Image (cartoon, rainbow, N blue to C red):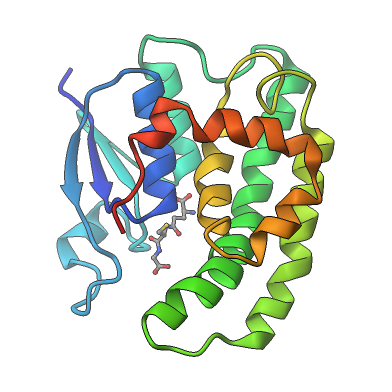
Length: 212
Ligand SMILES: N[C@@H](CCC(=O)N[C@@H](CS)C(=O)NCC(=O)O)C(=O)O
């Protein structure tokens, strides 16, 4: 089988999640840059891979996948290397719950509502929208509280083994923590501190850092 091809840009937290999964499994992949925020818009050819025009997409042989949760589960199951999903049903359920809550609530509030509004927009010369920030703060707080509550004793979110939940959370939390506003919110959840130190030092996280 040929190498998988990952489409997307390094600035994307979702592309980073997929890259972390590939790195953890030590799977070499080809990269095809796709800038969904380019002034000319999403390239029209890319919509054949991802009709919604988001990144990432993964091509492997004749399989084309989009949605990061589907991509990372596929990477885990299709390739050798350490299993990134717990075999035990309850732990797997919580892992899937963490991934789903990050997608449904965390990404929008923490990345767009807080980090983009308070850090990226001012850098680009645009005023932050206080209403967006105000709406995002309680959601981000709830996400952090839930991560702390769901975290099991041990080095990683699900206990002693790194899972896809850690890889999904790290790029979202990393982007969120670019915002000065985020640090005190995160510090209110001491149960996540050791986990953050550990995952942010992980080679798959460090080597997928975006230059921007
Ligand atoms: N549900 C998608 C979300 C992917 C996503 O939103 N990616 C962002 C970049 S981090 C994107 O493509 N944004 C383009 C846009 O919002 O138009 C997934 O899990 O892959």
